[in-house]
Image (cartoon, rainbow, N blue to C red; front, side, top):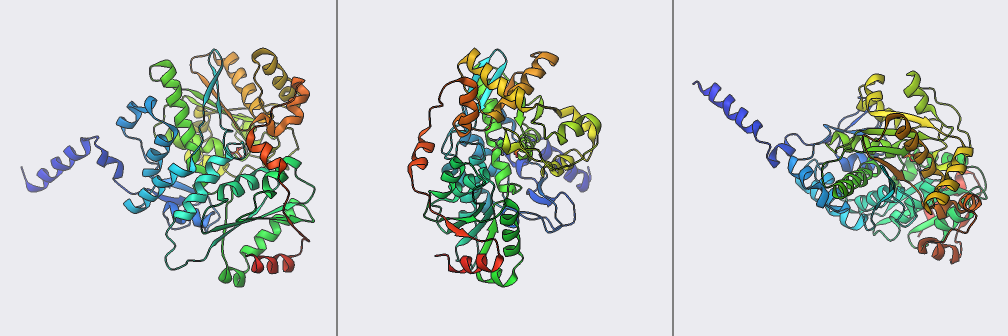
Length: 465
Ligand SMILES: *Cc1c(COP(=O)(O)O)cnc(C)c1O
């Protein structure tokens, strides 16, 4: 045998081994969906938010779980799942170690799987500080920012967020008390619910809430202007915590994997569930797709929307037509142009038929949502919020049409107490307040009132403690 042939058979032997080493063949990089930006590390993508070419960062290649990990899945906690996911995302050992260590502190609450009836389970994602699934991504990202290597720059990081409600409170709570970080929230005065306002404005500490006399669009404009103000950007270390950030997206895969783990524990064998995901910007569903690409057993996904149904329509017709959003009861899903759709297209090479093999869609109106909240209370004595109700409707339709060959897991995205008005109206009784809400409702609101002109905002930023 020639030397070259010898070398080849050696290599063949090496690649045959499914050992741990094969996990680390090529470091995972973050590349842009638009293909016109240099690849960066996970931490680099986190700091950048959007890629320079305007695209969204996606992992390349999508890492794969080892066979060993999948075999012992049913015995693992959500943090075990998180550590296993994140160890694949570092571009070197140091970064991997950092990303893994962040899991411990960030994921300090569970995601229990609750059986509703034969074949239907609810994955409760509302046990974090703001009682919604966004806590997973926001807490992870905040601590990943704090842990990142910033070279010589020892200034505090200032996160600017314009919010119309839920994102702001998840981000504020995510960064609250994290050393080396400050959050400045801008929200439109009088245009968020009392509960959302209390959640955003009662923290104090490193969180400052600016109550803007204007609309959400004004808040967004102010933040955009700050980011394009090169003088300000030299003075302050600014960053955003936008929902398209890869550091919020990837940690949302932890609870999908944990759902499969819990199902397998119940069933005592391998199970491939179908996930019903109440969707708006489609970050949550995209995180599930990435988990499936990593090797998580799954049969597919239901894109469950309210009447803002551009994705279910796309699935049906192959035509993606963004339009202005319509207000509904499930308002965190009132999105007319879902930003993560670009990632979904990318993951399937723009192929409508490939997407259709994995994602099915349906939409429901407020009347059906209300009716479902009441019916689930009557039949099961269990309260669901309007977003979860949309997910349940989609799951029930699938069960009727496709039968129960795969267990259905509905992602329960918010606690019913966050939407107590509609839940109380449909169940006829008060919703008990979880401790997280009770305590923030009692605290005094602390805000800095502000007009909507940039000069005032700029001088305010310069004076922040
Ligand atoms: C943000 C949110 C959603 C929608 O999630 P996407 O990732 O934007 O699809 C659904 N339900 C609740 C309660 C939310 O806060």
